[in-house]
Image (cartoon, rainbow, N blue to C red; front, side, top):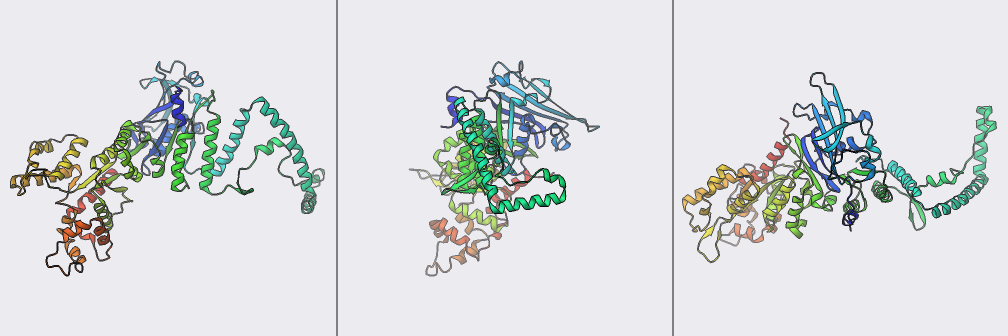
Length: 603
């Protein structure tokens, strides 16, 4: 069981940062972001993940100096005339005596505490000031003298460009110190006796080392040369030894090595070093979990560095389960994302030059969406969580086609951060539910199905009705479309020979749905392709295949083989998809590009 959950089940309510308010800070104009005990922060590059962590650090990181806390012009929101910054943390379950004693009179009856950093800039002189506040609510804050509380309430931060070797040395030493302090009296007595034995052993080893001929000769040679340089070297000599005569110093400077078949290997490779660092960090946290004098939170950027996918997934689970404090992680790893509880994910995205969090950060809405999706959630690749736009298509044929069409139109999907997903019979709404919970834009391309009603001689516009249902569930009411939908009943119980009035209505409705990024085929992919500028290439592709047939039904053959045909056709070197640039088939893909361009527009 997750150790965090185990503590909660036992009734141990851990002090947590439940949310942060960011106003006018860097790329955050006005944002409220909620957290969980283990929070994963995802989003594209330069979206503000590090800035979010830095906001936490300003209030809680002891390693930041007073100079670091001074606001600079680049700290103020750049896209509006903003001369104020507010960073406000909300803490819940504030019952630890070490924290309560530092904030007497500032903790609410429901054990909530708010700490704030506020900065201002004079618009005329450019002079900048800052101060800290604390109180029972966001509207009841009083100024306090700096970050005096950091001895008992603080945060440890690990940057993405971490020096693993230095971290390992530091954490290794700290782990030894922490465990040393936690020993019982009998353990200390035992250790003292063995340290005495180590002292004698070190003395013996040093004596034996100096007896080695090449060591002895080298020692004499060095001392002779030193005496030539200065006569005072006669009173002291330089000797080789194993590094220490003192057992405590010797033990405290032990190296971590990898043992393979009783042979020592140095711990090398950034991936292994990264795992070792995490293990040391988690173990120190385990040792210090009962420390009544300090509450510590942890921030780490991109823990997946240098690890292959399987180990990234394992690391995601390890961090969630083994560190008994609140942890904030930023990551670009789909593997780590897949291991986090959906309601513990903060997805950041850009909206009109400012960064926001989908559903204000961690929210049960995403958890509910994923739960409803059930076992089918594995169909959605985790890369979609990092996309700015997702193009949703019906099946494998459409998926292959739009991937190839992007290449044919020189559209770099990765550059534009676009993913293409096929719903493959699951239904668009399940996917859209998850995507909207994450604040991810989507475009739908679906067949304009016209199906016969069961046990009747009439038909219905299934494709248009599909898009209408998506509109009703996921969009705010639109006056123009609502007026059209007053005649929605015309789309059912239709004769096969569609009356002109209904046909015109369906075409108008189909065009109007495009404004909601819901694109309907003229009929279906195969028919649309054969009625497009690509038709000659398709006929040429089937030339040899249909030599013996007088009136070949090419569309039927395309539909019979579906994905098999599409894969083979798209890999034919003679096929040129660029002829579709101005065709309706390309519109959903081009709309995805428009959305991304709008997101990152500079004016």
